[in-house]
Amino acid sequence: MSDTLKLKTRRPNHRLGNIFTSVMEKMMSSTQKPFRLSASSLGTELITIEVGEALTATGRVSEDVDQALQPTQRFVVHKKLLCDHSSFFRAAFHGNFPEATNNPMTMPEDDPTIFEEFLNWLYRDQLVAFDDSQWKKGTLPTGYKQYCGRLFELYAFAEKLCINPLCNRIMDTLQDYDAKFNTTSFLGAIENIYNTTHDGSPLRKYLNLMYLYYTSFLPPSMPELSDFSKSILLFGRTNPDFAADVLECQTRWGYRFQPVVRKKSAGEMTEANRPKDPRVRDGVKGFGECFFHVHGEGEECDVVAVPRI
Image (cartoon, rainbow, N blue to C red; front, side, top):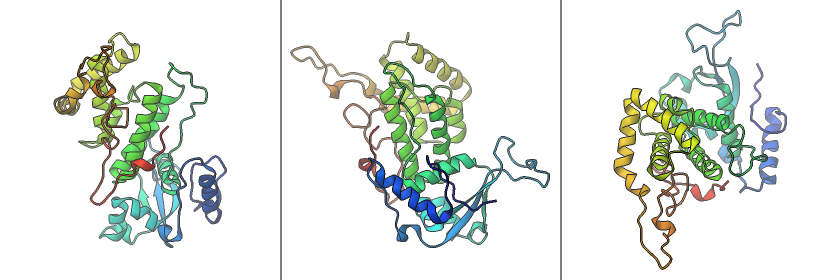
């Protein structure tokens, strides 16, 4: 296997010696705020991580792992950069765990393509963007459901490994795209989200609040709302955790969906008095910029640095 560090870019992959130059060129040519890597942030030690299923000598997948996973791929990553962004890797490589002395580290239960997308964020501070160049306002863009499905998988991976900044970036991206396309990213993904995220996950909270938002005042005749509500109701009958989460969200934040009518000369409502939209990342029309974020002790919110879509 090659020890090439694999990053998802529009250019072909380069060998380890050239890849950081390529990454920096792309970031400097971007219209977004440059994300700068330095010698001090990278460190000098490289580690090897094998992600995916273990293969037998015959090339078949080992029987003791999930058959749905992809064959093992090997990645070479800067140890310091990885540990600085994840308490999981920090504990693994600096604590009393086998990974602290064993190289390579193995992650047989994870998807190599998701790990590639994680590395894309780790080294470039960017998520793979959704191509909406052919999108027409008032329609749902082609491929958006599949794109959100990948973000949900990446979120579950980041949440499992305690990579809070990546979780927060994914939440911001989902909210912005949902608001732009005036839709919800959860159609067809509710069960998967509850199967892969933990209790109290901000992604679950966003799902629950979007359900309450849609059913509070939007016309029930909307096809999209009808499909979303049906899938929610069916899932709620068999998942008590979901039903409890919806009830908690309704109890704590349901009042935010009720408009407060204050008559003006023209009989209009101000924006501050309209029902709050969970997709909007501000404290006037929505729930606030940091509402769906998670931060560990000492972590600061970098929401100001995140470009809006």
